[in-house]
Image (cartoon, rainbow, N blue to C red; front, side, top):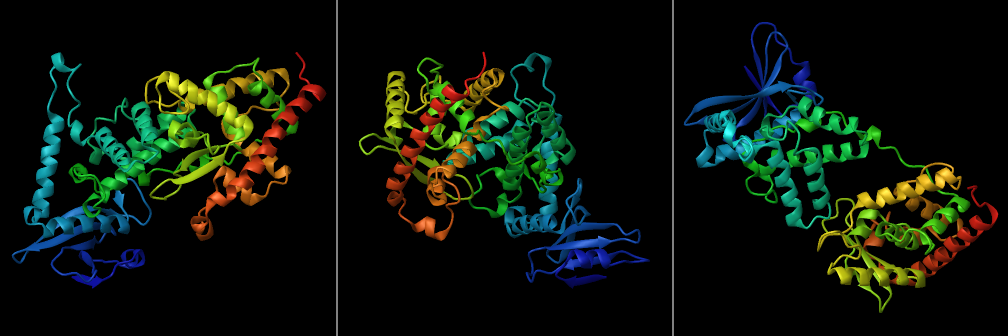
Amino acid sequence: MTTTTRLTNEIIESTITADKDRWLSDDDGNRGWGRLLVRINSHGERRFYFRYSIDGKRTVLALGLYTRKPAAGKLTLSEARKITVRYSSMHRDPATRDVKRHVVASEIKVRTAVSVKVSNEDVQTASPPNSRLSLLALCNAYAAWLDKRGAQSASLVRNYIKNHISSTDWATLPAREVSPKEITSLVRRVVDAGKTTTARKVRQVLHAAYNMAVNASLDPMAPSGMEDFMVEINPVSATKSLSGLSKPGERALDRIELGHFWFAIASPDNDLSLPIRFVRLSLLLGGQRALQLLRCTVSDIDLENGTLTLYDGKGRRPKPRPHCLPLTAEAKVEVAWLLQHSKNLGNTHLFAGRLPEQALTEGPVSAAVRLMSEKLLASGALKSPVKYADLRRTAETQMAALNISKDVRAQIQSHDLGGIQAKHYDRWEYLPAKLEALTKWSAYLNTCAKEAMSTSRPSS
């Protein structure tokens, strides 16, 4: 007996049977497209099926066991419905109308490709078995999609894939066969290496790549070929989130600490490396996000009008929002040197990398701040270690102490600007206010440095 209604978790869980199987049908009002069913047996087992008809003959295709909350090897009602939508689309296509036959044939094709052995002589040069449908291929397809969209995160995603996915034992597995446990093991390796923030990012990349594959059949924006992976369930969803590892930072330099730090990176007698120059300009600009400033190109600078434009791609906005910053007299000196440096190297980025058309990366910047922190900590100039993100927080805190308004601070640091008023407001009208604030801030940095050197010089 099949009961027809729109299913809920409560209906599925409250339905019991004592003698024979009970079937529940998820009626979405469509006819001839196939239907999601739940079979409940006398032992209480609940399993999802997809049922469709061809020439009056019904066929059912097992999907998986039911679960209310995401769990390894099981399906939630929402996940089962997503698979049903995909199979319904296949059923309406004459080429794949017999869904079960098509799915089985595809699985045989995949498993046959995996079982092909590579001869010992070709081990060094041959591609991994089934590399076209592997986990690595899925992640690369996602990265390529980001590249095509011009997403600012594309290069970072490629780095996470290269450094933390491509060399693992799971990279060559067929993407659709990777289990939640294997995803957990992959991410755990990064956690065990002490890279908790990177581990969260790697998990995010995997989750996004699988989501795109799961929804590919109904997403016209998804890259072609994504359906070939035949991914029906996102295994990352069943793994525990690493959000607990992301703790809001609290470290901010006090006035004297800021003075010692600024003196250490601003004095011409000290280190003038490119990463240190980056930190100097970032502070002069009120504490900018590292990635956004690193992406700045020579064409983003307007020395005639004294501006530097960054592009804020944070959040779900389809296009990065221009973030225009005025250059103080001190910042112009820094930018002028950087422009000449990039010109000499033939590089289009304001902070030139080692290779042409490559920008400086976060690694050297973080390392420079860490080394400076260790040096100042050892001398007694700092109370506790400092990392780059703490400098942005310090700028926000100290600018507030200078009575720079919250609105102007938000415009300088490009945060909390997602409202309707901010969206339609002409930000160029904020330039005079931002210039006044940054000029005040620049003078404050130098004042702090003088006070730190005269009143609380660290012991040698």
